[in-house]
Image 1 (cartoon, rainbow, N blue to C red):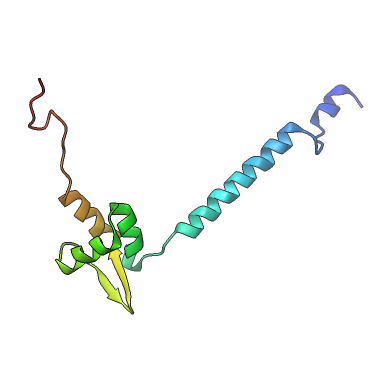
Image 2: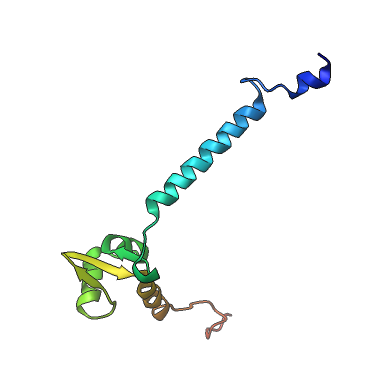
Length: 109
């Protein structure tokens, strides 16, 4: 065998092989994470639980319940479970957005 043939042989100790397996493991973890967190929606919409919405809005679940009672945020009550359309939560956030930057109506000295 000549030197060129030996350069093409990959052994279990080859760093390129270890790097390949590491990449495969990382991709596998990423795919599992996506599959675990993917929520199929009805009619193309995604639905969130009260726990997810309260975490997203950074408010307590009790505060979220007050928002429901006051009619501030739409929701579904299905079999004892509260669900929110992701689009409704996004609209709620947009409606309550306040820009506090100085170039938006405030004068800086």
